[in-house]
Length: 180
Image (tube, rainbow, N blue to C red):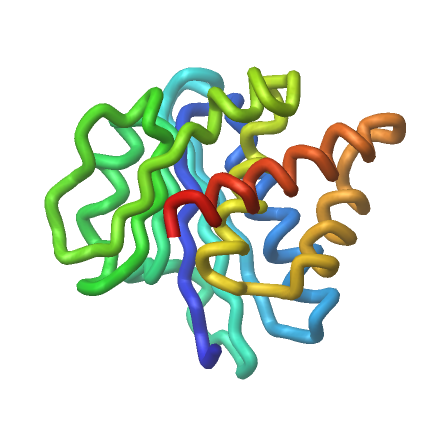
């Protein structure tokens, strides 16, 4: 991996900003990679489209913004439509199949999976959809070693939720394996 640009998107409150921070400030750094994370919210803090952008590189990063993501995760239809416009040709598009009814058109590898439903039903808490997302994203894209991702997640979650979050990572990995 020379440089990978990732955009994690959804609606405010779904945890995509936190997922971006875990990926950049935790997982990538733990592996000695360079990383930058930025974020933006829609006009509403909860409910409007939000995105976190992460650049992971083996070399210095000279521009801190994602210009053309290699990977887009979208947990809502609005986010999928709004943020897919500059996804690179041949890029990876990961969508939640409950909230995104129609994948944006483009020359991308599309993965539709029940991220939110899995968090709510299989893991038991919808609020860990962001961690399920990280498990699936990492399984599909191989950004960091699985144990590094787990270490990064566990370094950021509230005490007492470690098992819940480990289960969320594993659920995401299983989702990705089912659609690969």
